[in-house]
Length: 271
Image 1: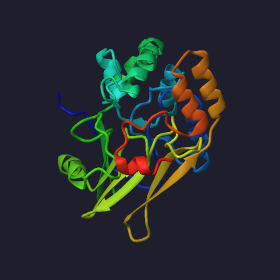
Image 2: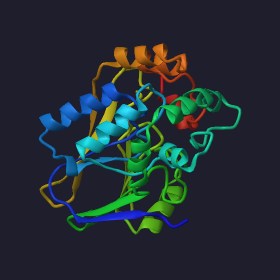
Image 3: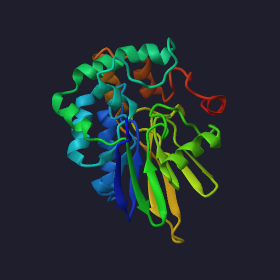
């Protein structure tokens, strides 16, 4: 199937990038306030996918994103929801803890989105590209070759290079892995804003987003920002709706229930 790419042409001014809402409406509402405080318009706000996920309000999050008018690509969860698949397509190890937990939250998400939600998700592209000055930027979910590929800071640059070559980009804005990071090499920049729906396994209840802008020398400046939100309500709604307690506790503690998707380098720095 060909990749659906939305080309926005040149963009100027400050840009906000985030990923992984994961059905966490309270985090999304906090991001909306942060964007307003930063005076960033909706057409300069980009989501790297996975609007839907572990938390309790999938339909409300899709409705909010649509009414806000921000730009988003499909994540693997949206892709599988639209395809009518019976799992999230997150690329978890079969039979592992994350795979088993997905068999609880994914059916809940599937049964709690509306036809209007599905119609909106159908309009989302696979990738978005635009230019900031002379730099070509592409937004992807996992990698340009595989929507659910986990790419971390420790991932070999040769693997990242495949996405740069495939998209002919200078800057990649990626999602999926859940941890914010940056890496620069050979005049290329790989950026992951992190996600807003779950903490980054750093022992805080904060989540993350990123701001991009041109620097004084016309290069790209980027900065990572913490997002504080009403995690107690988000976790409580998960408990009320009988969603995995492990993920509810992640919201409360800032630590992931398990680190099975993490490479060794990321495991060392996680606790």
